[in-house]
Image (cartoon, rainbow, N blue to C red; front, side, top):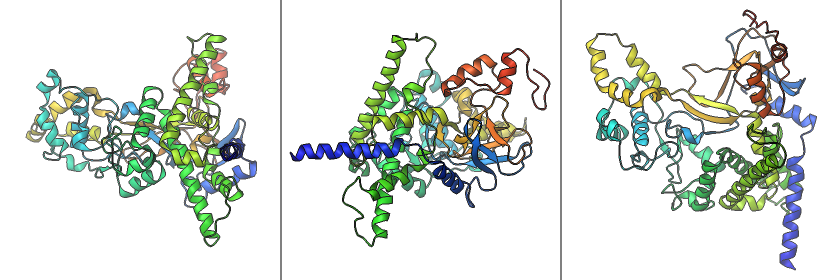
Length: 501
């Protein structure tokens, strides 16, 4: 009877949490949330507001902007580096700043490509391209000495002029894994406390660690979750980070409620008012995002026929998501037990769908590119340039066109995600040389008046109307902006500031 009662209680708790998490926010709650996001001291203060647009929410200019002005600089609410990019760029797992040194970045990249296992010596950032080969391939050995690369990696050799391109020191994950590194104690603590203590792979980076990561959910479980995501869809990692962060924030909110009641437990039941209020507060930023069930929101691929074949395609997506969620629940066992509604497939599917519909690319230019461009800018024919290029030339040849590979990731931005798409937008994401982290930078493409809706193009605006509309179908709509309507009718469009196309 006790077991039956516990099962019933758990089912009731899950339903209570699901009702809270899946309910759309009220108009009043939405207005209050975005008012706080644009209040004094926030990135959006005096620059943007959120209001009703023709298609749901919209982002609006709070003042006039002229072409080239920065309209908004906003850090991601949550983000991640793409798995395929980890071998190209060693960046902070929290803010996406490059870490280490120019030498470290170059040597790590080349040793990864050659399968030399740079992580064992550099202590972080494993994953992505790289492999487990026996050594540097013959062609690369003729270009760059592997021993010299290892000296660069360990800081035992310096490249001429690299001191002009400083980076924060590389801090290892406190759990001892080789996957994440950080630029500061603050970023390290933020990541560890909010999610990484559950997702850390441990001391050997592969399931056998004995560091702090093993206290959370077990390193084997964490590695199983991460490996599954890397083999299927790495957006699951971002969704997992978000669910864990919400659970941790809910625990903190409930603990604060205990303090506010002079140390008395506000209630015994995890489904009681104080516990549900804490969960609601932690979930609020996610509640505001536009969502859809992931496997239903994705447009049907052209090579998948309508009918049974499409049904099977969507079932397979659902099954993969369910596998990922089960692995996530295993690595975050305690939070998933306290918050069964949060760690449900219904919520997991909505979060992934939210990312697919709203996420923006995170891009951070590489200091390595800046370094090689500075070498190229040295006066031609000088003794100085010749001496520098004798050292840097072989490295540049080995890197080839990849010398300028940036950090690439994806993130959800609370304000930017309110923007609607237009194929003749008035703002665009654009960073300059001073932007060194994962913040979104929106720049005015033309003069903008206060009160005007801010729009960006979700896809390549240079593409033809058929291509744009096909790609925008993944966002769940057929674009009917002025430009698309005119181009679809064969009329061309009078672009602002340009000739008719």
